[in-house]
Length: 70
Image (cartoon, rainbow, N blue to C red; front, side, top):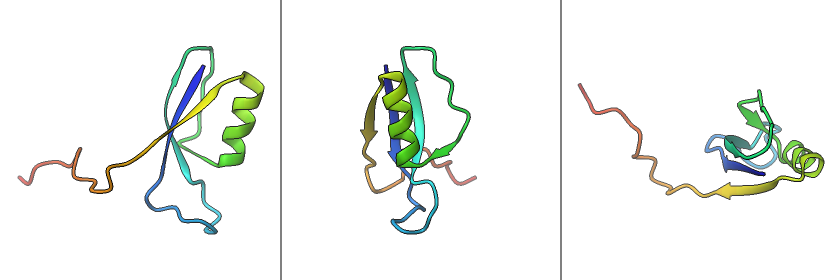
């Protein structure tokens, strides 16, 4: 089983906000109901389910996915 996550743009180290966003889960029978998750929570999920955590990097530009101006 694999859990795919990416780091959120608005979260910074020491802000006490969840730093990761779950993008998807492959294999297994795991449902995650949280939109944002802390690293310690991710590690606990991976440990108990035997999943591997895959960290997805961002391109840094953020231009993809924006709507065209109307």
